[in-house]
Length: 299
Image (cartoon, rainbow, N blue to C red; front, side, top):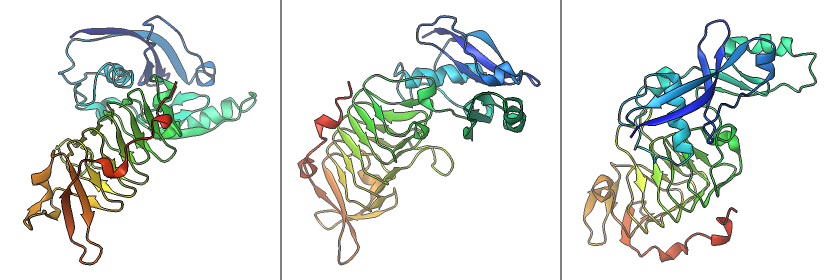
């Protein structure tokens, strides 16, 4: 699959380093402007980027930005496009209200625009910008845009509450409630709920290479954690963190490592309130009642 898009690129005026690229969905040459460009710290131009195969690793920052756009546009799903080496390709950028600049240029920018009618602020210093500054997926609600990176895949019907977080190359495949953390590489199926303060292991630092996924109609309770994959109709009790090595007592009394249950459907994981033992029992998923449909009609 060959993909070719036209983007508008900002680069550092001194070093020529690529700072960011915006790819309009219309695929037209649309120039941006900002105060950082006005005072000469960055310059803008157009660039045409071609991806010959999404299976090959990106070769430039421009190509990396196009791949992140494709994910957030839901043109490709997480883990279906190669992002190997993306951190080494992207510059660390100060994302400011006056435009993106290299961190070393922030004080220069602050001084150069001091006379402008502009309240200057720095949103963050990171290699990944906010998704909403580049792409707005259809049918989603996002309580705090700072907590969703470009490259997040949010399907229509997804609601990300104010404390929810979604990393790049991760996200949802259908209606979902996200009040917790979706780490890199993680995919959430339709009808699932990530409770407040809950976390799902990713594939970046310390996360290993195993991709964690959740199927349909799962509930990850508040402040719970997940380090194995789930099938459909599963529940993890609030406050319970399941890792691959967690010892789980099955209904027949057998003790197994949670990794042996990875990907199975219809399981309720809970901690015995008196012994502290982690148990798994069969469930059809109806115990939690499913999503409130009124919260996911994001028209």
